[in-house]
Length: 351
Image (tube, one colour):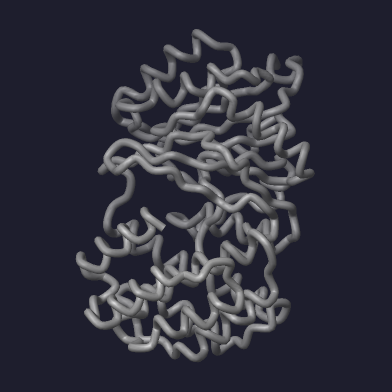
C-alpha cells in the first residue's frame, strides 16, 4: 500500500545480488551517494548463501529509497526481468554488485539523454581489480554504436540507462544467458531506438576471479556468435553485404580461428566502410584492424589487404600497423597463442 502512495521516482535502479558480500557495500554506497537523488533502488537478493543478506538488510533500514526483495536463486536473467516489472520510474538504470558508480553518473547520463534525445545511454568504464587498470571508450553516436554491434557489445551493461517502456517491450531473453545484454542491445537497435554512450568514465568495472566460469565463457562465446550472425543478416541488405561474406567475417572470431576467405572479408569491410561516416567509420576500421590481426598466421598478404582499405577509407597512413601485420604474418603466430596475445596487447595499448 505504501508503494502506491509514494510519488514515482524518475529512475529505477536495479541491482541483482548473488553472493557478493566482498564488494557489495562499495557498490551500494556508490548509488546512494549519487548527486541525483530522485530514484528508487530495487535490490533483489537472488538466493545468496553468504553474508549478502545481512548487509542488504542493514542498508534497507538506513535509506528509504531501497526496496529489498529476497528469494531463492533464479539466475541473472530472471532477476533482471523481475526488477523490470517492479520498477516505477521513467528510466531504468543497471548496476552490478561488484562495481562502483561515479557520483555524478545519473546526473550526467540524464543530461546526455536530454541533449541527444536518445532512448538508451551507456558510458565509458575503467577496469580495476584483478587486471591492469585501463579505460574502455565506447562509441558515442547512434550510427557508430549500431554498426559496432556487428562486432561486439558497445554498451557496458552496468552503465546502461534506458526508458522503462523499452525494457518492458523486450525484456532479457532467458535463452541468451551469458550473452543476455548483447542480445538485448541488438534487439533494441533492430527496433530503431536511438542509442548513445556518454563519453566519460561513469563506472569502475571490477574484474576478479569469481566472475565467469570456463563453461559459462564457452556458452557466452557461442551465444555471441549467434547474436552477431542474426544482426549481420538483419543489416545485410541495407549495408549491401552478401550473406556468404558474413560467414567469412565471423570465422575470424572462432576460437581457434578458422581460416577465412579473405577476399570475402575484404568485400564485407569495403561495403561497411562505404556505408559509414565519421565515428562509425572509425569504429569499423578499429574492428577491421583487430580481426585482420587474427588472420595474420593464415594470410601472407594481410598487411597489403589492410593497407589498401585503410588508404581508401582511413585518416592515417598506418605504416606502423602495416609493419606489425607483416611481422606477425611472417612469424605465423596462431591467434590463440600467448605470443600473439602479448604482441596484440602491446599494439592496442600503444596505438
